[in-house]
Length: 494
Image (cartoon, rainbow, N blue to C red; front, top):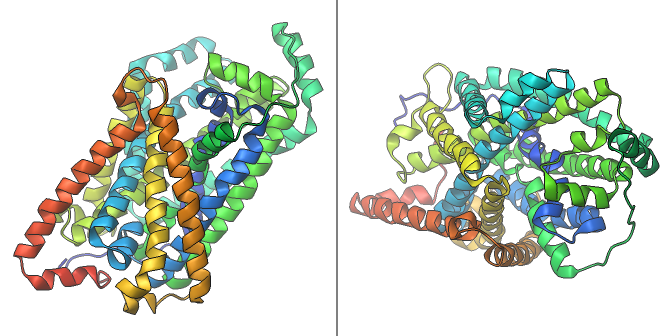
């Protein structure tokens, strides 16, 4: 990029960076996945919470790897920059292409799920007939696309509008989320059983203990791993972070720690009131969520409030995740792997507006795909596969960077001791390998209507396309002269 062209601007402080990571993680991950998990992984029963905790382990080590690498390479594109400079340009592109594809699809999935929560708010307010409109395919798709493009616009307008949109919604999301936690611990299963009998004349058996199965437990943990994906969006904003060598690692660690604690309290509170046996049975019949489950015991006004909180949590995913995927494309374009037009920065707003528009198009495809597939877990499965591969390669990069790029390795400013770095990288590689094998096996042996409803074949096709794109562009870079390869040893200019 020519030095006279507009650049990305360092205008995101610690609070905005943390909000980017937190809002990318909270949403469907907390309100839907820990309860719908019973449909996707039958037999997990009473072991959802232990599986949730176990799922955090590989994410935690990946977060440490991200934090260490971000201190040495604070640039837009995060994972792409780290792996292309510290491992290999091809693996850097594949790691981030995998991430970009998975997250792009999930943005559309989340926008699609948001419509159901908006519908539930309308029902809670007493507009039952109006709520029926939200079941129409055209309305669901129309609203989901409107949400996507609204936040594309917010991102294009720049850091000021981004922060003014994201931070208030995050605070409100936490306030209403803590209403769920307090309510869940205030009531208990006897209150729920009584309310269910009074409202629907149903009597249920409360099963406290279920048989433990390691295969089921590990399969559930691999899927619940998706709940901790999102902190990486902080790294993607590397060129827009203030004092990046300190704020990026700090924001990554604080985001995953705070979200992990909130997840545990939130999910424990819901299962404290709602018996897992009821959750498992209902998940087979319909889409369920935390607010919908607690509504049995809550006064109507509070039920509406927590459904609104869930809707806000889902909507809050969108601006942060759009920021993430757009910066990946921006970084590729700067390195010549994608068309140079995608690296264009708005002269006034200092945002990669072309990359954001392309991100909006990809997210729109994800939303349309959710309607076609009829099950949002397909999108989540694709994201889980993509992000496991991405996190695996980040841990490998942490192990290889001193040998591949000693100059950049010397810039690491957090957890400087090499023994600690090696331990983090090795444990991360082992855990993520285990999770990836389990998740892939479960996907390939699932009872899917057709091959394209399995995430692994779809992901492999996308990786084939990514490899072809890289091969073509790499040849062009080689024909341009040996000096062109030097960009993959140094950081992009600011």
